[in-house]
Amino acid sequence: MLTRTLLCASLIAFAAGAQTNPPAQPVQLPVKEKLHIYLLIGQSNMAGRGKIGPEDKTTHPRVLMFTLANQWEPAVEPVTHDRPGMLGVGPGLSFGKTMADKDPGVTIGLVSCALGATPLRRWEHGGDLYSNAVQRVKIAMQDGTLKGILWHQGESDSSASTNATTYGARLAQMVKDIRTDLNAPNLPFVAGQIGEFLYDRGPEHTPYARVVNEAIAKLPETLPAAGCAPSSGLKDKGDVLHFDSASQREYGRRYAAVMLELQAAPGQQR
Image (cartoon, rainbow, N blue to C red; front, side, top):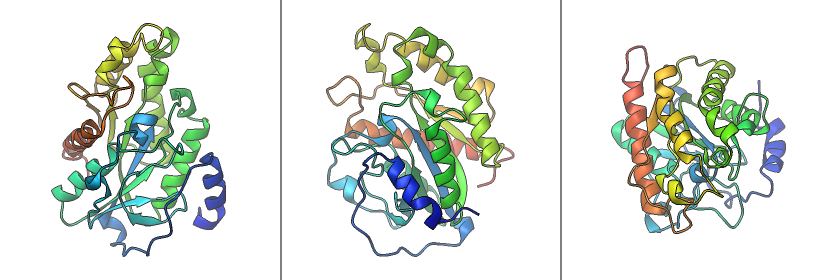
């Protein structure tokens, strides 16, 4: 069995200088079946780069986050500590609050392994980020029940035709692999589209953003228990790359809507 002690040091070192919050008082966890765990993976827009406001520091009594020290704490932004000096609002906290409000009988646990500026190949089976995510969520699963995965990545694969045109097939295989490694063949998986503002960023940056978004939109056609959260109407924070805070909060609600739809499908357990 994986233990917090054995893996704690290696996972913190892996985070490449990531920061942690000061130690918090231990939280009271519910029974394992009532702690619903969600794995958050991808690059910077999953990690979050939006400006943090007062509402992002407001906790929900039933939304927790799994820290780099492998401890549960009340969830506040930044949920993800991936790049010192760049941390901000992502979709995870809004997602967690929405899911908790939909089911007053459960507590939501967010396990974020997102890391900015990372290509899909590092998230594929055998990649370093894939291995880290599987290890961390298995540790978290000692306390709760895994209920789904949120994915947001693709900006890094939008600059080259080879990466973009193979994106859909590679992403689908990654989902199959991680479900196998987590022994969860029907685990709901929600992929978010990258920002449509990337279409106008210029040919030297993300010329294949549309190709990647089309692949993400088609994922549910080829993969069971998979959904797509659309990015239409969401705005960037002024850098034509990262979603602003309001858009990230809205995106979290969109992720939740798709996740709830997948969980309500026949054969799924809530």
